[in-house]
Image 1 (cartoon, rainbow, N blue to C red):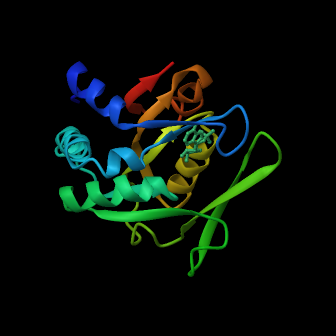
Image 2: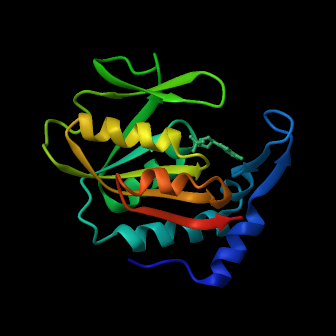
Length: 183
Ligand code: AMP
């Protein structure tokens, strides 16, 4: 499947803003709001993702709360497939499956609706989020997709913070694609 050309990668990288010490000291937050409000950059990214996945025979795109919703829903509408939200615990209203994952300190939990894939066994699902850091969130999300009866055909991220090696955690579960890698 197609990767983005170097010139377009450089264009997207300039559209992402670094915010030092957010949400806590020592973290450099990759702010994608400056990519979203840059129509040319956002359009370039979404056209690339649509081209990459147009023939992937996807049934659903699952996005991780909350920035995964933006890219996932836009891509689902472009490709004409359904969108499924994976949310933080306690937000989804109907019957759910939950998966806990470890944070630096303590645990967090994500959920998916039991009927997210409308009973379609083995539905081809693309997972999408804005960024992979340690990979814990994406690992939990892939388990949820599987528990809900889907097959995660690829995990797609706009940014991979490669030095944190989150990709290594995900590769045994699903192929990983990152539009941009940052060292
Ligand atoms: P992880 O589970 O460690 O891979 O963390 C991934 C989640 O945390 C994603 O939903 C990201 O949006 C968010 N995240 C982690 N680190 C950063 C960062 N440096 N900048 C922006 N978002 C981040």
